[in-house]
Image (cartoon, rainbow, N blue to C red):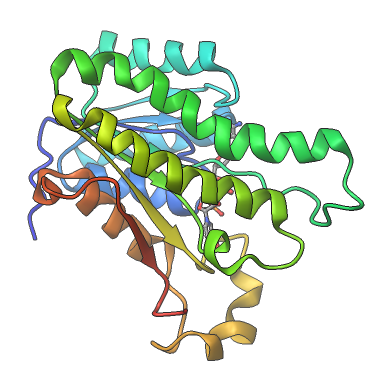
Length: 244
Ligand SMILES: NC(=O)c1ccc[n+]([C@@H]2O[C@H](COP(=O)([O-])OP(=O)(O)OC[C@H]3O[C@@H](n4cnc5c(N)ncnc54)[C@H](O)[C@@H]3O)[C@@H](O)[C@H]2O)c1
């Protein structure tokens, strides 16, 4: 399906790492969008922007730490200065923390919420400025099936991802009259550089026989970001090989 993203301007907040954010950046560029490749890791942001530029779409790198609303606002300002508008925002970064709620430090627990939940909200709050002025925009938040599966050792992470889903449902209703859409894409395990070693051990839990790779998650994100999904807002979609 041609998603018709030619000329659209997309910000990806965690474009590096070689995982889902990197795949999303390349997928949006392949579909014709200009990409603002944001990552706290400057070398990754630069690398993704360079790759997109070599593919024929335009890209710039930005380096906002999404835990800072001020830095997110600067990221959006840079996008508007260079490209004139913001059509798409994809929020990626999350932090899982040390695991055990009982044994984690308060600082580590706060960090999970700061990156995963507030990092998502800060980027959205900043991007809404141009989107509301344009009266158009599409936001896709990266969620996790952990919100529904509630695995042990992921309480803060799962609660943050769960909060993102509820937030999305509410915000979609608030933004509908401004023609700004917001949806969530969840995943269970995804083949990324970080999860490569887990592939064999878990595939029996996945009805389609394997878990998705990051390109397959990126395709769902690109669809929801595009006008092909014009009547979809406030929804959470799991790309998880049917794992319940
Ligand atoms: N990998 C999986 O199996 C899986 C499964 C379900 C959900 N997810 C979700 O997908 C998303 C991406 O996961 P991933 O494993 O592909 O990538 P990742 O967790 O490695 O992070 C992607 C990028 O975000 C950047 N980042 C981290 N903190 C940041 C900050 N404060 N500000 C700006 N950038 C920051 C990192 O530098 C990295 O390049 C996360 O939201 C994660 O919860 C992943």
